[in-house]
Length: 560
Image (cartoon, rainbow, N blue to C red; front, side, top):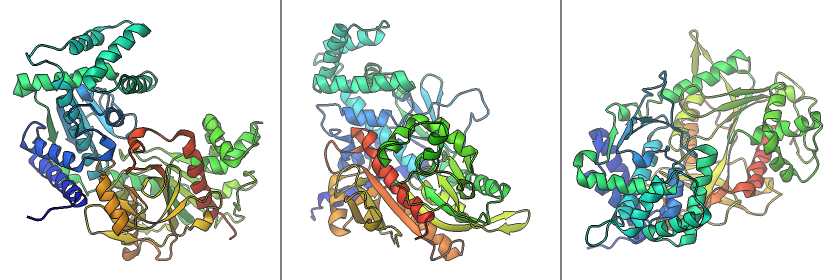
C-alpha cells in the first residue's frame, strides 16, 4: 500500500474537512459527539495546525490556542450546547443585542442560557472558521473533562478547588489567586507560569472589553459541558446549519447591498466620473498619511521626529484627525449591509493647500476634474474578498441607465504569514496559489523591491491563499515553499485576483489597470511560538503598515 507524505496527508485532511463541512450544511446539523463530528475532529487532528499547538497531546491543554479561539468567538460560547448558523439576522430589529467577538467582525446573539446564534454574512470562509474553532474547543473540553475525576470516579482535589474558585465572588488576594492558579495548572497539565500568563491575558480583555468570562470560568464550563453530555444525550452539543444557508452562499446578498451603497454615495457626491483608486487596507493608515501632519499642525501639536515614529504617535489623535479630514474631502461610510466592511472616500481635490509630512513624495493634483478619488475598503474575510470585489467592479444600473465608474488602480495591502522571513518583513505577490485546489492566478504586480528603500526585508514571489487561519499545517506549507517557491500565505489575495480577472474578461475593468499586492508579515506559521496565536505585533507593525501605505499613495499621487 502506498505511503503518503505528511504534506499529502495534510492536503487530504483539509479537503476532507471542507467536504464534511459542506455535507453538514446540506444535512442541516451535526453533533461533535456523533459520527460527523468525530470525522471533523479526526481531520483537524490529522492536519495538526501549528496555531493549535499541543492539541493532539492528551496530557496537556493548549492554552495559546484557547486564547486565540476565545478572542474570535462570542463571550459565553463555552456555556452553550446549541449553536445555530443562519443566513439572515433574526434579531436585526429586535431588542436583543449582538455579542461581538473581540477579534472577528461577526454578528452573534446569545439566545437564552445555552444557545448561540451566528449570522453568516461573510461566506464559506466564515463557516469554516467557526466550525474549526468549535471543533478545537470540543477537543480541549474533553481533555479538561478527563481531569475532573480520579480512577474511583470521585472529583479530584484540583477540580473541587476550581469549583470553589468559580463560586468565589470577592476579589482574590494574591496568595489565594496563586493557589487557585496552581491547582488549575495541574488540571491543565501546564506550568504554573503559562497558566498565570493566560489568566492575566484573558482577565485584561475581560476587564477592558468584556469579551470573555475569565480563565477559571472558561475551563470549568468546558468541563461541565462534556459532563452534562455524558449524563444526558439531550444535553449534547449540537450545531445547526439552517436549510437555506448553503443556498445563499455565493448569492452575495450582503455584498451586493454593500457595493450598491458605495456606488450610490459616489454618485451623490458626483465622484463617479473621476479616477477611482481602490485600496483594501485598514481604516487608519491612509487617513493618517494624508491628513495627520496637517491636522496636528492646525491644532498646534508637535510634528517633529522620524516619519514612522510620527505615525505611531498619531494613534492618540485619531478623533482630531478624522474631524479635520471630514472638512477636507474625507467621507466615512460605515457598513449598513451586514458585510462588516466599513469604507472611506477621499476626494483628493480637497487636499490642495494641506501640508504633508516632508518625507512623503506625494504630489497634490491641480485639476479638480482629474483629481483621484481614493476608496479605502476595510479587510474582507477569505472568500468574501471575491464577492465584494466582483460586486464593486460590476456594472451598475440606476434609473434605467448604466452608470460607469473609472476604476484606475486596485491596491491590496494587509497582513500575511511569512515562510521565508520574520514578523514585519514585506512580501510582494507575483501569483496566488489556492490551497487544496489546482487554481492559481498570476499577478502583474505594480510594486517592486525598489519601491521600498526604507527596508531591505522585501520578499518577492507567489503566496498561498489558504482556506482558513486555523487550517495551516507545517508540512504542507513547507511543500508549497519547495514546489511553488511561495514566500507566504494569506486568505484573500487569490479571491481578489479571481474577481479582478473576471472583471477584465467581462469588460468591467481595464486590462492595463495597475494592480498592487503588498503584505507585511504578522506571523511565521512554520515557526513554533511565532504563529498568530502568539499575539498581536504591537508597535513593530507600525513601520511595515505605513511603509506599504506610503508606497501605494506615492504611486497614486505622484509625478513619476
